[in-house]
Image (cartoon, rainbow, N blue to C red; front, side, top):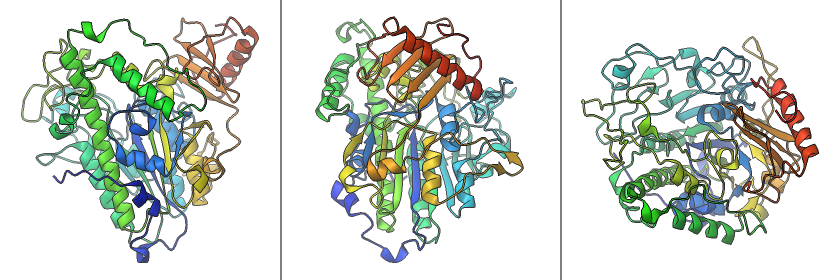
Length: 561
């Protein structure tokens, strides 16, 4: 397999499409590429304070625009549903996971009362492509699930075919239907509707997705239509699987431990002015143990090194994609949006039961996959199945508290880079914006740029009105009239954010509501619920109204509940 590093200097990106002018689209509408990472931490990439080598993403940021307040739904499948439909995840049918809870907002598969970006843009004349992880179709379990996961038995379908990407607006799809997989031999890999029976020696899914995306970009250069591509990486979601040469780059980086890495990220964030004039935005570390006393320091340092290697390989692939755009004369008029589906994960997957759901317990050739509960084997190879855990997740999400599946900023606020040489105002390039955005805004953005129309009906179904608002004004002027509020709920983790920066959080069914002013307390260090009871009551009432409207169940009753 062709594994290569592609680093594009800012000057090349700024030059845009200087080559292959003869292949420019006659259609003046921009191409749109949405790149979604999986469980990437807020500070993992260089242009958000990280030490991981991400020169290609940093180059996009240098000539693009970084959002510091961009929100998701706190978990993979709900975020994907919201992103693709322009709705809250409950309205799109996936309030929790891809299992049917027999409630309207929690059916576990993408609703037919929603349309996807691909369905709308296809009607508007765009070519549409998806490369990567789907994870928004119900994935029922089979009696022979373990053998299926281990490639010992074969089934033609992984879910209802009507819910595959190619039947929800995408002309083509190469990637996975399920959510978690072996990076070296992924379960549920498909080409359109057809399962991929086996993969070549040396296969690594991050590289395969990048190669496919770049290949398709080159093909689109000869098409008279603009294209929409949704590139959904599986990285850096567990298991911690990475290529040896990528791990080698970080073998010593994390031996200094959690505190030093977290503090260094915070210093870099301050130096880049990530939150404007705010100089005190590092939340307290959520653990009292010290790295010096850690008996598993070697294993933990290796785990973070593998995580970094996974992110590094994504960045290399994005470089490959941008190079393909540039060499085919398409870069200048392509909008690239890069983001993550949620914050870094605190999950300890090695404590899960192997061989269940989407977690294999052996390789195709019969080798055992070790879930290292006692950290007895180092992560990285195919025969291990491990994750970072909460302490490194706390680092990855610097400066915030908490992580994936929580409604604090560490779970729902992640990086977002917008790059579009022809469309982003020159005065904004290389800068930061505090304009608040949400993944459901991507649909409205695509519709505006494509000159498309959001339908009231689609294939016989009444379509729920779009909730998202276009980000185009932010790209062109730096400002927009944004959302009055944003609502969040996932497994009874709830939050509500108002336009003026007030935010309430209720971390569980039995917890009390908390109140923060993130305009001045960006990392939620000071719960002021007792100081502003009237504001708290007002916000809780507004949350309840949102929950009723958007099929959120169960929703809280009166203020204080």
